[in-house]
Image 1 (cartoon, rainbow, N blue to C red):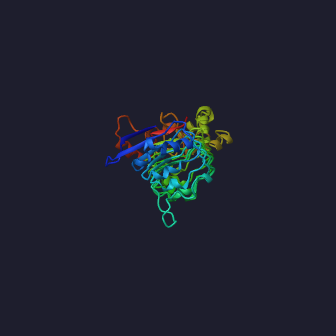
Image 2: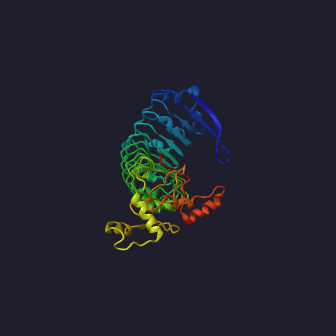
Image 3: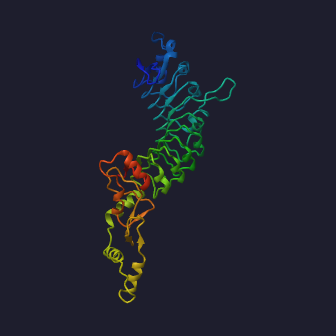
Length: 372
């Protein structure tokens, strides 16, 4: 066990005292003994302790004396065997509560995460970070929607099947991590989290994203890999701050990459493109009727600077590139050739401001789109 002092990162540089019981293989009885032993005199200075690390032990619950640490701000309970979070935890002025990798279920959590007032009602919460990842939650814990000041919520690695429609109430959220669950649907309410910067939905069962995702103007990272996505909302291109989009292991990407690799234009397609590009108009008796019908089925490229056409072979495109620039991410827009989008890439040596300005006119490019 270590008790040490470190400088706080707060602007007033106040002294922060930490007690570290991590990785000591403690059970609950032994921890109680450590906290109450007179020679350690911990309870006498309990009001000075702001951080308590109890991670990687053999705890199945929390010690009763914990509530005497009246100024505790950070509590790390990760990697134990805790089956119940008592109501007393909510009475502490915690800013960070880490309870990942335990045995918590939805019934294990307090019915309310707000502190109880003297009159019996519920007051407010000081929590800004809550980590319940790697537990046994089967549905989204509705209690967290009460936490109006929460900025970071981690509930990945559970068995959650859905996201609360009341999540819109959590207007302070910066990070919402839900990866590694059983979520199949994302509610429109997620689009109301105006301050959200990172949305982690990887390794779920998501097939569609709501159009409201495009309202997340502060979103920087959107992790969607290992889902069942076949398309993206077209308005996602309006997310100017999005710099990381992870799409690997989705039907959307797998199909597109296979098409790129295995289906080059046929000779008939190439010949038809040349005929259309040359401006020739064969008469009714110059070519067989089937070929005439084929030529009439040509689709114009959506690129206004391209006069080309395509028939059966087309390039599916949104205005993003991945981190190596090799593959184009498909999205509701069809071009006759990948060359039609080369002009959108910023020239070497161009400044960030120049690139941003060009993005406003030609669509926003990802600095990092992970496809594989």
